Image (cartoon, rainbow, N blue to C red; front, side, top):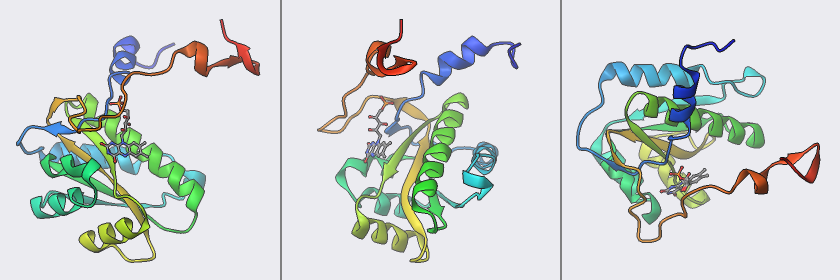
Length: 184
Ligand SMILES: Cc1cc2nc3c(=O)[nH]c(=O)nc-3n(C[C@H](O)[C@H](O)[C@H](O)COP(=O)(O)O)c2cc1C
């Protein structure tokens, strides 16, 4: 039996979670930030190591500095807040996986709360070092992304070089029992 009375509605909303890069100039309430942090806290991780620390960034100067690390993330300056994901820096693969899980949860939760969110990566290693400096993160930690969050204007990609939209069809990405054997 479904655990909620409206699973189809929630699934429909899940499919609407998009990378949001345009935000209104409007704050997010502290209660909502607290809700998002609870969602992050309860994310599953490899062996429940919870290899993370989160920095809530609402200082406009810091948001701007992060946005200036790399042109493809210049939209971060417009976000109301960003949550930086800081990893322990001990297990590269599993921490990268856990970072993806917590990022997606924050994006889903933001969407369900009526906001929009987008992941923004600092870039290659020298840029990650700069990102760490901006946020005062110890050198031995891994930090390479923030989840920017705000009141969504649009999920259109406003960048001069927008990422392709849409998704590949099920017939191309799913097999039945054996790789390459068609599913339906
Ligand atoms: C590892 C990773 C890095 C990304 N880096 C950027 C980025 O630098 N700038 C950006 O605007 N979006 C970035 N994105 C977001 C992707 O462009 C986005 O997930 C993809 O285009 C699908 O967007 P949609 O769900 O809105 O269709 C990144 C996503 C991932 C998973």
